[in-house]
Image 1 (tube, helix red, strand yellow):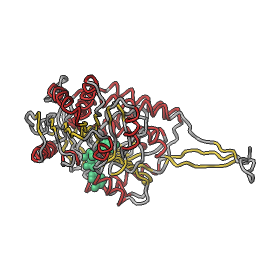
Image 2 (tube, rainbow, N blue to C red):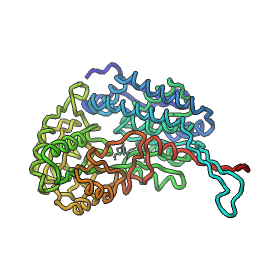
Image 3 (cartoon, rainbow, N blue to C red):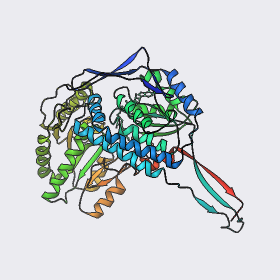
Image 4 (cartoon, rainbow, N blue to C red):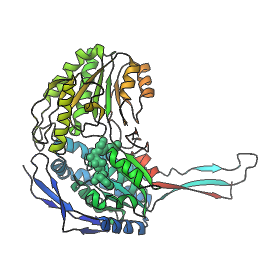
Length: 481
Ligand code: NAD
């Protein structure tokens, strides 16, 4: 392993670096070596951070916010190799995927820098009705007292960026508790933002175990908004605990790629490329990773060998090797759980076509065909680079019913050249997003994004929507026409 140091990090509270006696170890999934520590912070630390956030009233002009955001994006570019190195070390994804994540994060800041300049205030004339008046009503947006951000392990840079960039763009103060599994990148990001000119009160990082610090992140009196990305159980716990506080809950997914029977051989090749890339990108640990490939019966025999061929070509192994195309999942227990779901599916009649050996957290791109659509492997969120193929009837209505049969409703991809069928899927799938001829995960960082059912409470993220969500609209009227 080529690592130069162990990072013993502190929290970032009110411009100070805060350590505690107890620490949480951060491990490199590939070797299980300790590569860093963060403080085992408590509710007291979170309380202090929220106090600071609530008492600070940001006065940055739109221009200043935009400049900070733009500079932050540039700094991410300048520090790309450093960030990618630590993304690989704490998350275990391969260097190529880590580089990709840094570029996505840069996009977030580019969009937020542009959006910060945009005033979406509205004007309503009041002389519109028979009892109208010679007045005008105006709208303006105001920041809230404090925002609590709780983030997951799987995109340590981009997920935090999707919270903090819109927060800065709207002059808000945010306290973020990154996951205890991959907290180091969030801290590196905080330093980048301070270097870009952000007042430290506007973004603070606290770390700790959920049982010690989690509740304070939901109930602190200063919190107006909780923005959470993570799994369904914690999301539902927040919904129960946080009561009246405004919440964005971005939860798990079980996204299908639907491959229709109108495709030519060349189209099936294209669909197989999308399928394999979508199932294995970021080690399959994207909320929008392809978790089920639903292929219609009459093209399945042609399609499956194409998937198999592409999966076999993936170079998986040492995450730090720049040639590696697939690294680890977050830890060996997760890898084992997902592999066991494959074994269980095989007992239920699935055929395992490719399963090179798993080594700890290094889970290969396992290809499984003929998976029953109600097998746990494809009913639950299997958060790894498994490529499960479910053969489904040629009738689109049946495919939609199967697709909609899980508890999740995040995103979807459909490969068809028939516009009528495409529209039918867009209308018929119970999801937040439907991409025709793309991975479910396709988006730009400012387009609305978020799920329904167990995948989220339909509050959208993406820079533009998050900026609206993070603000209160105030209306005021003036006695002039
Ligand atoms: P998780 O729910 O285990 O943890 C998420 C965060 O919640 C972490 O910071 C964790 O420390 C915190 N947490 C855990 N218990 C808590 C408690 N009792 N109180 C307060 N905080 C608590 O999720 P994870 O395993 O880190 O992330 C993977 C999940 O995130 C997957 O389900 C994935 O689909 C989902 N995800 C969703 C999106 C989306 O936009 N919908 C994006 C990325 C990831």
